[in-house]
Length: 247
Image 1 (cartoon, one colour):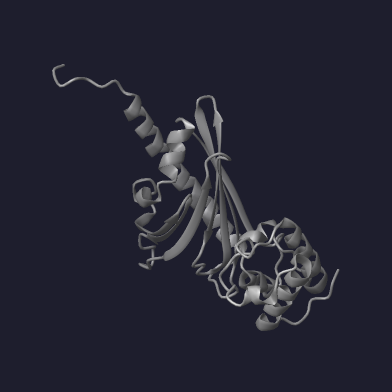
Image 2: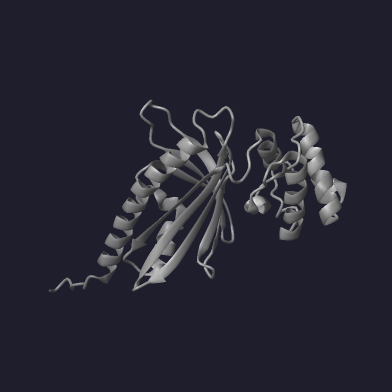
């Protein structure tokens, strides 16, 4: 096990950049405007991430998560600074069976602009930008029990062929990072929809990873049930025989 060094954010950013230059052959100038860009956006692949994981584990005794390609250098540095590892971070998984065909489930759950009609927790959705199957949007929740309104920007990219969606928070708020993977699987004429969420809370957050996992698990069950009811109702309505105006 390596000995964890005293953390300095700027130094750690530079060290991670040096590791990636050495392991992936990137030019140092690549990182000039890389603050918010993911490792994948910088042109890195899974082999570079494996090298990064090995060096960070040895140098800081911190395990970088497998989805690091979706993280920025700043987010990785923050994870290193927290002293947490992927094993310590928050993780939740929930699934539900929806008695409706895949295409309807896919279309309704990926129609972000109309999520206020699908979820019970969102008061507003603003689509900021779309690029192919990628959409960036702002979500605004209904006021919580203390009257506070939470709002943040997220981004999601759908892959209809693979029947999965990868999403993450752009404005992370109390999270160091938050990644969500949606998967869909057909079964007996219906569709299984699953959510996997990986996250880590900031040291200044009002709750830790364990408490947030409990909150997310509770809320996911509520929202999945609402989504199931609304999609199944839409499916029944589309399948109902239509009568003519003349009877």
